[in-house]
Image 1 (cartoon, helix red, strand yellow):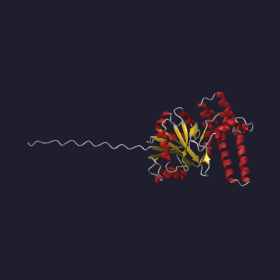
Image 2: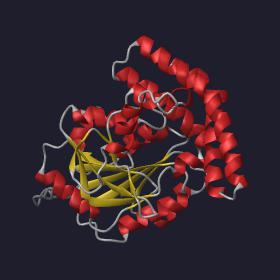
Image 3: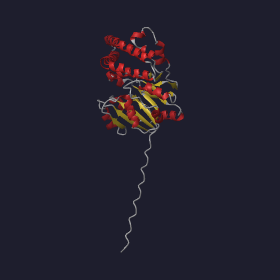
Image 4: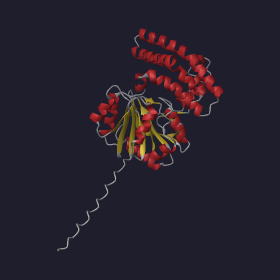
Amino acid sequence: MPQVLAAPPAPTPAPPAPVAAPAVSVCIANWNCAALLRDCLKSLYEHDQGCSFEVVIADNASTDGAADMVAAEFPQAVLIRNADNRGFARASNQAAAGSLGKYVFFLNNDTVVPPGALGKLVAHAEAHPEVGMFGPRLRGTDGAFQISYRRRPTMGALLHKTSLLRWTRLFRGAYREYRRETFDPNEARPVEVLMGAAVFLSRATFEACGRWDESYGFGVEDIDLSTQVARRGPIWFVSDVEIVHYGRVAGRQNIHFAAPNVAIGYVHYFRKAGASRANLLAYKALVTLDAPLQLGLKLIESGLRRAVGRKAEAEKSLIAARGLWAFLRRELWRFWKA
């Protein structure tokens, strides 16, 4: 019988080529504001950013079609659809977990990124690996510089804002130092806190510092992240990178959610920073007593502004009043529980 030869073994397929990770992962936690998000994504994709990047968006159950807009108009972006509003910190962590870049750039949805901005941030990070986090200069749509960094807040600085204490000038110096006196938009420098609208850091640093603290609902997370990162390396404001920032759009559109969570966020931050139980109780009591007074003043202010034709400013006062009412009516118990 003729000898039957065995078929030669099939060649082993070559392993797939590894996907090159982008230099930067732009991570956006989104809640509504579809039109602003579209402008933000256009600014990233339609201009040379000076480095490779990806965009990962975690959408918190937007009701204005923002997620569908991203899927239809920006299919190159990675889209995570949440069934509910998970807050800024959780959504930002989701976006980071779904990304691949060496660096992560957490960006608000109400921003516009000019050409080359990402490349400049990468260049800063590569030249100064000892720096924990970088923040660009923020400019409003009116052309004015926005506060891009601050000192860490103290209870005294925040209590100066209350109507009960402001007239006494108590803590006035602490408040002015916290808010404005240390800000210079033209000088690159180490700082204590970067505004969370745009912060840039290595993935390794982000993971090592524990990521965003998901105990925060909306607001004060940026202060906490800056505090955690600063334990591992300095934080720098870089004035040669500028981002356009509309500012507070999502917060104003959803003031009933934003205002109470900011108040609760400060309590959580002070507790983490080591504030005593007695100081926390005093702080909560003063904020609680002041809230109805602030509510009345904002309503009066809104009426007076409207009477003299300052409709835009009247609306801002009314929005603040709505936030205070939401705090008193629905979230006061959670504030005291924090």
